[in-house]
Image (tube, rainbow, N blue to C red):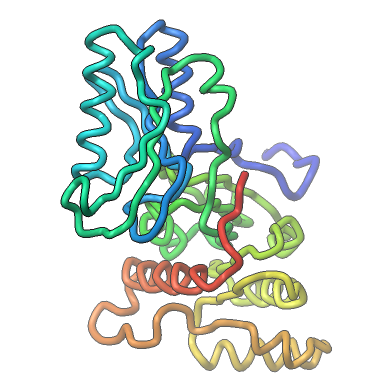
Length: 299
């Protein structure tokens, strides 16, 4: 007999913090092993540039983790770091250099950056910047669409909470990427997990039961501070659920916030209802919507 749960809601796995922390974890490992390395950071950016301010990469003589945008900018920055590593003269690392991508490197971006080279030591590890996420998303449902959405968001800097009322719903092993923070939550009342979402979060509802979708939608739509609430299904499903929610007293302004069907409206034709295409379409919709939100969440 399955052991009785003390709580109907618990973390199936610990939060896996990645993004900057993946590079930081490697930095800590290299430092503990006594390996000489250099941190290259975009300390300031102006105009059109390939990566955001605060982006870091880690470089040793024969390895590199992370990227400051690739191209000639990264190539020359890495080469300069490695030349000093080979010479064993990290005291000569430039503290900061302003580089105009067009005039200096012949790149077409048109912007400029301030680059900083830092020797790997306990101080640079302690001062590591926090991870940044484009958005925080609760995915309700670990079925085909939920799993496909995880693949579609592979590599996107975001924080994901994956919720299901079935204990064995998630794939094993869980997908992972250095830019993504992921936690799974098992709950017999998944609608209660909505209360844990941070203000400005996104919620996608795609469970294995329409009545569960309805319960989650009811709680989510009552929260005016959520950035986006989407539910998988047809226009008919949306109309029926909204009708019942209206009878329960939900305001018209709350009901209008439900995005359903989900995904970009112009994705039609053969294969448009497969989990992979739905997931790609929803990922694009969330990315498009998040570009209009207040900005990046720091954790």
